[in-house]
Length: 148
Image (tube, rainbow, N blue to C red):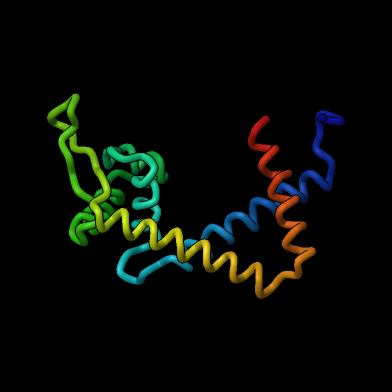
């Protein structure tokens, strides 16, 4: 579908706007689900562990783009709150893997619910039906881009 080797001005502008809006939307969604007793970084770690149980601190640091020492501090706070627990690695007894506790899983689900409610409320309160339908169409276009 590429017309030339150089992106058109509209493709460049669309790219800029999509990246900017997605970044701001992601931060706003995280803020909507923040409970006040954990940081956005800790919230992100909980979400990552909910879909990748058994990661090490090093795995998390690499995935989150953080230094190991910073991730250790982030995880320590979650351990102290009882949201995460350490488990021995079944393949290497020297390594510890992290997993969500029952309370941690509950916190993740509450955060997801808060984000769903916030975004649905914003779309309901600030957009017309036609605009919401346009968002649905735009999302299908973006979805197509990631499945090339």
